[in-house]
Image 1: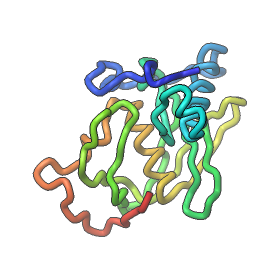
Image 2: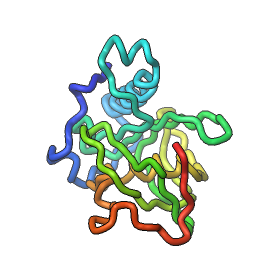
Image 3: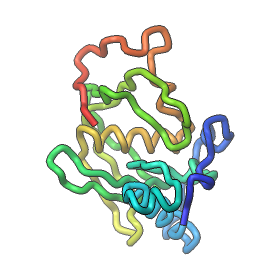
Length: 184
């Protein structure tokens, strides 16, 4: 089981590397890594397990965050209609996105970043993501709101990009024209 000790922190070189594609079909090792990412995210949302193992709650995790430079992410959250969005994907890609932007009103956080970094993180309001699940099936997801933001955050990790790279350095809370605010 992954713990907070397995998660690399800001400044670690793995977080700035472009991760490699996972060759298909995935090896047992790659499947086990992806499964462990999903287990961490699910466990980190269970108050008893959080307490017992000192986990920090998260809704997404990417392989580079555990020092594995491969294109794998796990996301587990509910959308604004309380639908469960729970996916562990190999080689996720944003294949289309809206012109319209959105941002989390509370800003974003990251399991690899210990401090709070204030500011709006502009994201696409809607994205379509394609990837391969643990069963080897191609998955195509149309996402908006918080799920769209989380997938963009995790896919950024695969490209060596941190959420705070998107924040306006001069004015972190500058108005984002035509952007839809999203409450967490």
